[in-house]
Amino acid sequence: MSGGREYTKGQRKIIKRHYETAEPRAVQRLQEVVSELYVAESDSAANRLWKSAATALKNLNRSDARAQQILEERDLGELAALVAELT
Image (cartoon, rainbow, N blue to C red):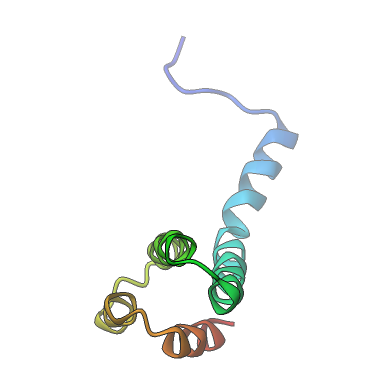
């Protein structure tokens, strides 16, 4: 018996769609984070959302200098501009 798992045709389609839609889901999550940051009322909520933004950018393979600078400065306007470029 081989160590790999065999998937049914339906399971393979589900897995394929999951990976095909990974980037759009990450962009959508980043859009949601930007919206939530605009209305965040507490520092703890904002901190949590900035961590989510960092994770979403990482999932989009956006670890470049611009993304890092946006995260370090917590520049919401620039983050929104970056999200607009991604869509």
